[in-house]
Length: 121
Image (cartoon, rainbow, N blue to C red; front, side, top):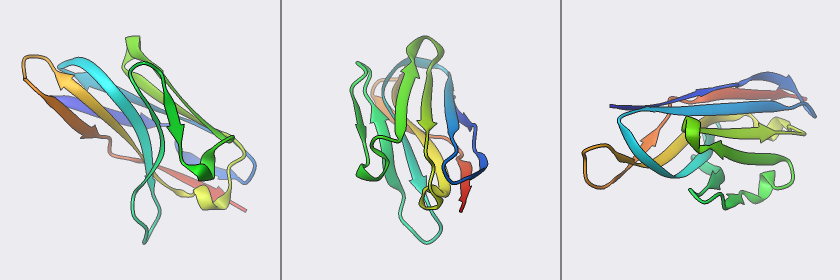
């Protein structure tokens, strides 16, 4: 069994910062890419930022220069540092991991349960 658990969401004012964390646990052999997605009410889920196992990153245009994704492979954890938050960043944020499970062939995609980020103007 594998679980991804996010934390760090909350209510902040525009211009403030938040740091999201996501810990993957369970029968994990290795983790390839990890990423953060978000979904606002009435909108489709969208990629916010992603990081490969080697540390290469990519970001949605809307967050470039404000958000930073990083990971700690020893802790199976991915972070999202969000600075200069805007009301349009308000959404549920979901962690995603592409991983290999111990004893099970193949790669599998897992999602966390989501953490809410609300930015007031």
